[in-house]
Image (cartoon, rainbow, N blue to C red; front, top):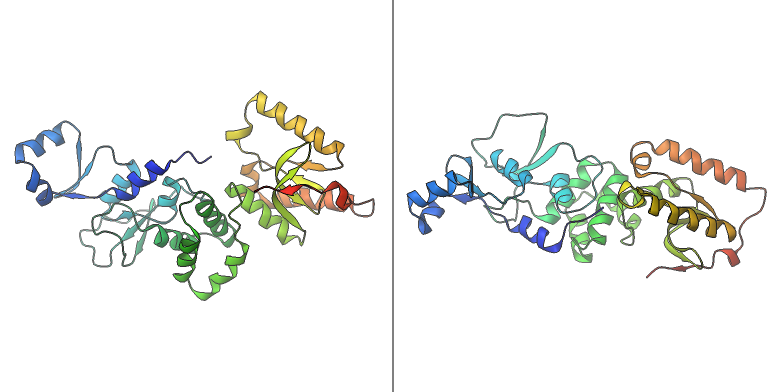
Length: 294
């Protein structure tokens, strides 16, 4: 669930490293010392500081001598990434006093168009790097998420692909900004891999809007703990499924964890339902007359 606001994103992307010489332009030594003692400033390296309200991920990147980058930055900005556990840091090629290597950090050495003292990498650069660091389906899900949430617009998406080798252009037609979650994108791509027709964010009369409709009769709802954990939500889902069944639909509700980490299990479930359906009867166009959601 994305709870990152536009204000949050602005604060992250506007955060800068503060040098001692810069601070001395405005503040006497004693004032700087008091800010450090009081916790308003954090010393990250010799002569380098950050504000205490900076995100911990930005502070850690500054301590490493770089900027938060790639999947780490995108996740902080509320974008879906598949494996967020290792910190990704952008390092200038001319960087000195680099911290010792560790398995907990992935370093990306490259020049950047971002402000020299920025604690965060450029968003387009980070998105392009995330495509390189993830499997193709996860890369598509990340770009869908960045596009859907407004972090990247059409021009931004084009700029991302402009930074990638030609082989990545095959991913571009698979993007769909209507996807409302990473698991939804991953599920759509899994279904496509079976050669099945799939549409997303479809509104069905008497049911409401559903995540995916496959072959006109199979509804797939990509359930996450954030939206489906409590009893009220479960009752609502069950009643929607009953309404869908009344109209001839079958509903499958794989959980996000399985879509992301056990895709073959989910694929086998889809295969089983499709195999059972074929040879019996198919839902005609009259049953799948739902409008695409705007």
